[in-house]
Amino acid sequence: MIRMFKVKKVLLVMLLLIFIACLVIFSGKTIEAANNGIRLWLNIVFPSLFPFLVASSLLSKSGIIKKLGKLLEPVMRPFFNVPGCGSFPLAMGITSGYPVGAKLTAELREENYISKEEAERLLTFTNNSGPLFIIGAVAVGMFRNHKLGFLLLASHILAGITVGMIFKHYKGEKKNNGSVMNKVKQWNAKKPGTENFGKILGEAVKNAVTTLLQIGGYIIFFSVLICLLNETGIISGLTWIFYRLLNCYGIDKSIIESILNGFFEITAGTSLAGSSGSGLIQRATAAAFILGWAGLSVHSQVAGIISSTDISLRPYLKGKFLQGVIAAVYTYIMLKLFYPVFNNEMPVFYESGFMDAFSLQEVFVTSLMYLGFSLMILLVSSLAGKMLIKKIQSGQKAAKKA
Image (cartoon, rainbow, N blue to C red; front, side, top):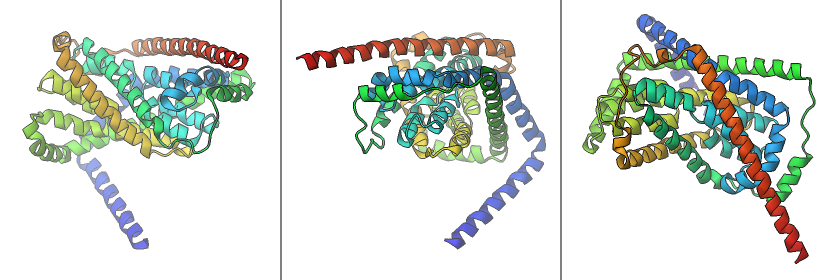
């Protein structure tokens, strides 16, 4: 055991030395890659996620989690085997993007709203790519096809929900937690905090900025890592190997390259898929898989976010891989059925790259719009949950009278 630990330590040191040497050898390329990572974070990620992170923190402190837990227990428990409060990270994760769903799930666990098993179950399907990135960046900016964005978004969300229903049986509760109505009574017993609003707002802004700085660090690091993997020929070598294995299935070499890049970083992978010379079906299917998988860059962000909890990363990784596969299947089927609808590319307005298609103001305003949409989803879901609770209660009363 000690000898194995020493071997791992030596290998780690060697890898770090090789990494540093590559940074020096390819300094020009790595600086450019780091600059691109900074631009991506500053122009797209920061303005799109900041409103969600602040708003979600304020809503959590205001007692909305308690109300959602009470109202949406009859909806979330049968479908996903998670408490009603799980609807909060689900709605926010779908409308905002990576890694907001993971952040909110971790906070629910830290506040003890959910158990360890429920948190792991919830994390498999609440951390999703947002419509701003899928429709705006991928479909319009990379594929020049705005209609395709709605297909990719639909397949992405449906795949996530499918994964949630599959993982419903993951580590089923060993003890009987009672009926849905008993759960509702437990949520009624929880009381939100009564802190000063100024203090809550200050903490929300501080936590949002801290989280975004951490996300920015991962984005820049993986931008540099992807650059080195391409410059050293590692990606090219792996592409050649997989191409030889998969050539008989008619998969284009550029598609394999995009998936390998997307394995590490979502933006690099989807960008290569969009610019590939292969057919639309292969390109869109590859992009759907990459969006569902999310890349090691996002997974590293999630690992950092849940590090303060007892949530295991393993079920999350399984769920994301499964989401990628299912999203790719959904996209492939839909394109096969309705190919003429989506086979119309837009004129190329932004030759310099997809990030130039957006201004900070546009990203921020669009993010606020999606935030409002997510709150509307929660409101409608809450009303539906309230009606369902009343129906259950009236049914119980009728049964008692009988």
